Length: 125
Image (cartoon, rainbow, N blue to C red; front, side, top):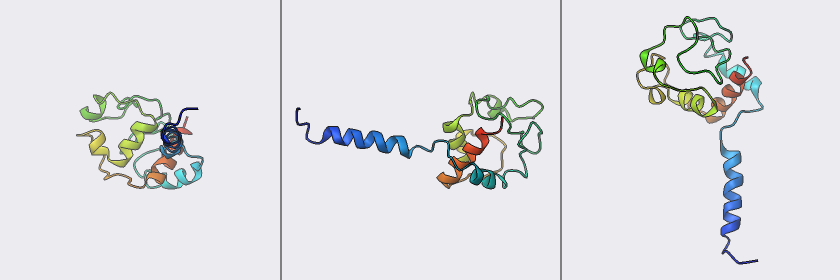
């Protein structure tokens, strides 16, 4: 076997840490549901629109398309399909992810809380 100066080991470690360091859907949906309580003032977990749109089926849905909700043009024209990555970015900083959207929320900075809430949202089908 050719000596690569540890490069192969470095790549293997990088691959392993990369696969475990991504936010990923969590197994702690209960914590996600608990974190979601702060969101429930504006968002329902079914199709009911409140101050914000209902979030049932959010994972896989195109942004700005929940029936009957008056979205901002920024959200309707964002082209975003909600998945783990886009939800993580949006929950971290809504105005950075979709400039001009109307959600009056500064963002959820804790990465574990974001991963858990995304895992919980994925259960809303």
